[in-house]
Length: 68
Image (cartoon, rainbow, N blue to C red; front, side, top):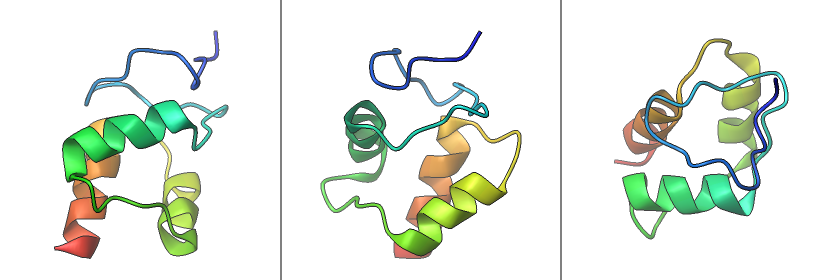
């Protein structure tokens, strides 16, 4: 069953699925993990879409790596 990316309770271990979307819910989670400076950009969104078997924690860690 696909996750509802608009309302699912996200954790660092939440796996991304084929129905992943950059929703306000995802944005709120990533701000909580990465800080108020978090924002999506095209290269980062392409990285997310281009990698399988990611967790939300790995997504947050990658953003931090790119923006530290």
